[in-house]
Length: 144
Ligand SMILES: CCCCCCCCCCCC(=O)SCCNC(=O)CCNC(=O)[C@H](O)C(C)(C)COP(=O)(O)OP(=O)(O)OC[C@H]1O[C@@H](n2cnc3c(N)ncnc32)[C@H](O)[C@@H]1OP(=O)(O)O
Image 1 (cartoon, helix red, strand yellow):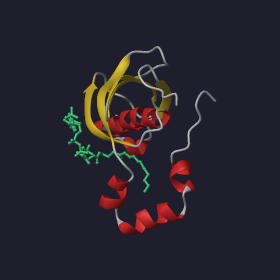
Image 2: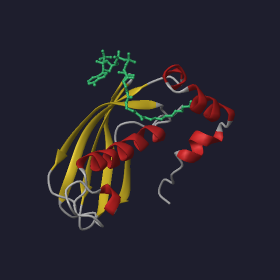
Image 3: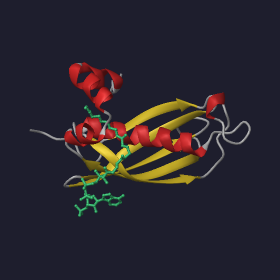
């Protein structure tokens, strides 16, 4: 079976809303880290691999004002066994604009048992009784 790996990439856009403020008028760093984490995490779905974030190292290079569109670009740099290494940037002012945030990540492949053993029973049961739920929740189009 063919398997995607190094070189797989995704792009995404995230618009900073007033609810995402940390300092007045500026995005909270944790929200920006979440946007990076989510974009990086979507790479694992392209590998058809269930994985969790093991490490997320984030650089905050420029302040990101509310209403800014963050242009995210993430790619896998290496896959070694269960370890998936990836990197992402978030640019402002356009896809070619200056880098405002960047992150390097390590995702670790897990079995579905990771969630069954550690998740809350009610939510696990709901997910298991509706196999399409996870797929719908994570749905995204590649090269729409
Ligand atoms: C019901 C439907 C659901 C359907 C599925 C839904 C999917 C939803 C996905 C959501 C994803 C998230 O929200 S992620 C949420 C945030 N992340 C988490 O909660 C993860 C919490 N951490 C853990 O559970 C654990 O630490 C794991 C699983 C990541 C690793 O534990 P483990 O499985 O015992 O593996 P372990 O041997 O420790 O590590 C494997 C290899 O990775 C390396 N490694 C591990 N962690 C790190 C680290 N932080 N920094 C560097 N290296 C690391 C180890 O050195 C080792 O390298 P070597 O010796 O092999 O060289």
